[in-house]
Structures are given as C-alpha cells and as structure tokens.
Image 1: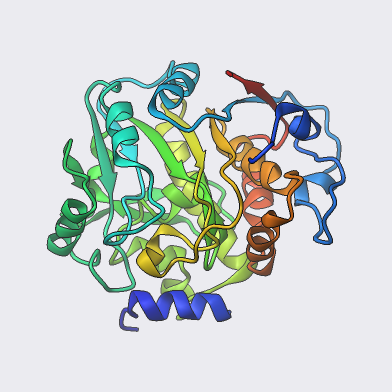
Image 2 (image 1 turned 45 degrees about the horizontal axis):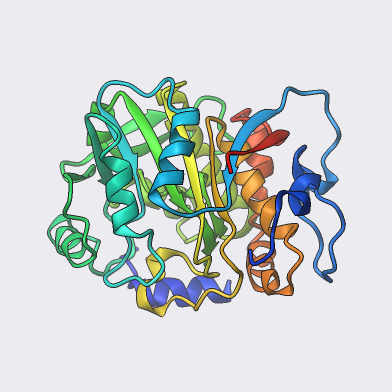
Length: 340
C-alpha cells in the first residue's frame, strides 16, 4: 500500500487552567477522579479496581516555562547518564502548537551529551524523507542543537517481550546508539490515538518511517490503517519495546499546553485549542504520567474540556492506559506532587 498524504491521513483519522488548583485535582492522586459537572463519562481510571499497589510519583507544576521544566527534570533524572536521546515531536512546518523552542533549548542545554531525536513519517509530506525532514526542522527553528533523524540509515528490530500483538518493532537504527532517553512530550489530542502522551511520543515517534510505523499502524499485519482499541494495543507493544530497552534509563515529561484535539502532525490544519493550559508533569513511570495527564483533563471543572474528552473517547484512546497496565509498563496508581 502506498503512503497517503498527511492531509488525507488526518482527514481519514477524523472520520474513522484557568483557575485549576491542587485542590481541584486532589481526587486524582490514586488514579481516580471526583465527579465533575460534565455530561461526558469519566476516564477509565475512575472505574479501576482499587488495588493495594505502591503509587508512582508524578511531579507537577502549573507553570509552563524553562525554569520549571528543568526543576521537574531534576526530580526524575537520577538514572539518566551517558549519551542521551531527547525524544521530541518537532512538528510539521509552521505548526502552531509545538513546544516553544526557547523553552526546549534551555532545557536541552541542561542535559549533558544530549541530542534531540526524530524519525521520518509514514504518511508522505515534508517529513517523509530525511532531506525534507531536515528542511522542516530548520523552518521550525530546531537548529540550536544536533537533531538525529534516527531512521536516516534504516532500522533495527527491538523485541517486544510478552506483547499483545507484536513480537518486534523496527525502530530507527540510531536509537541503539543511546544509553538513556528523556521523553519530552506535548500532551494533546490525536486524530487516531485520541490523545498523544508519552506513549505515543515514543511508540510511533521512534519507529522507523518505512517499516516500524507501518507495523504500529497495522499496515504490516492487517493491510490497512487500524483504529480503535487495536491501534492502542499496537502502540503499547511498541512503547514496551523501548521502555524495556532503556530500563531505568528513561524518564518522561508531559507539557499540557495548547492542547488541540489534533496532533502536531496536523501542522497548520490543527484545530485551535479550546481547553486551557494545565501545566507540566514528570515521572519515571510512563503509565502514571499519561494516566495523570488524562485524569487532569477529565477532572478540570470547565466545560471547555469536552472537545478533548470527546476526541479521546471517540477513538477509544483510554485503551492506551489499560493496555500499558496489562503489559506491566507502570502503575495507574500515582501520587501527584506539586513543586510550586
């Protein structure tokens, strides 16, 4: 099957705090939230069985700036050493919602021996080849440090131990050159995933454009772009391969800013964000940080959250969280720790 254009990809996928304080989110500390004034159902975590499990720490700040991003990182960077990959979604040309370059630049400068990494895409367009991708990086201002397009020289198979569907996923071959990974994620909606958090950032973002992304999207095994719960499970398999590879030497930061219902891969066609900015989070637990981010959206006492929640649920996006739990990738029970 030939690659489809970015515009058709987004179109196809669509078919198939102000005033938020810690008191407003205290009910989500264990992965569950209190009832809110919304006609939409709550996140899957609110229906979770109350298990006697140790809670993972998720550090949080309402502030969105370089100083607080660095302070969050200092809480979760104990095992980050050696050659460090900073996984970031650098976006389509002139994307309006990508993370601020100045903030990322200041953050990356604090991580010794670090390099931003990206991989080519599978849907055509200005990031489908390495040459075009580098042009896009320049347009979007990602010129302050090296950017490694990790599938520039092909791919390498990472095993998926006990996966739900996949036994291996083809990652950009350069990924194997790194000792540690820092996953810096713009948390937002996603046309196919419902939401794009830390899992999406690595599961699709590190898979090679020509092979791995086709595996994660189902093209390799099913002959079509799969959607719904199956797609979430394939993403979880891919994410597990990366988390297993790096072990303790991987950590996660989610920035809940300009949360359009569309991913940064939608570029200038992304819907304008409606929900207010909520802050930033950091954790060494990928499930805990994505669970906490979703819970914070669901527990916002503001009807402007409804568009994003509808996007999450219409795509069965909450399956990302339960699939990660089944794969033992982390805990959905967490303690939210403010650094403000």
